[in-house]
Length: 120
Image (cartoon, rainbow, N blue to C red; front, top):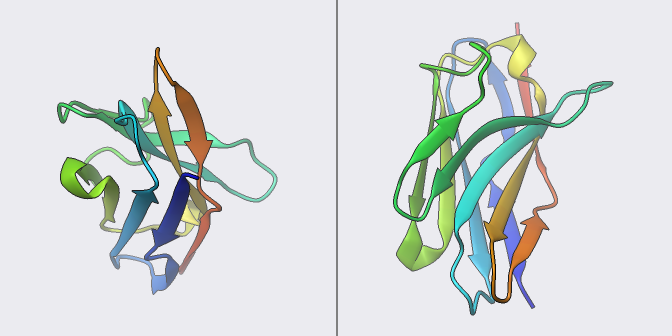
């Protein structure tokens, strides 16, 4: 049974930093892509960033996170991180971890979400 455990969310003042972690356990077939998405109240879930097993990262097309957020992963630990700096109130959302594998024994799994609240 694969489990995703997210941590690192919380309340922070604008301009502060947080580091989210998501650890996947029970993985038998290796993860291709790990990523973070977020959903603010009343809005659709949106991409924040993804990273491949080879370390190629992709960020949201919008300018909302570029230059402030950094995604990374530790393949040995099946863990993905999201370093969030210079946080803004508009970054307030539930952040969800996602892992995907294509092809043989493929999967597309989500974490339970971790709340990030940025106060002004």
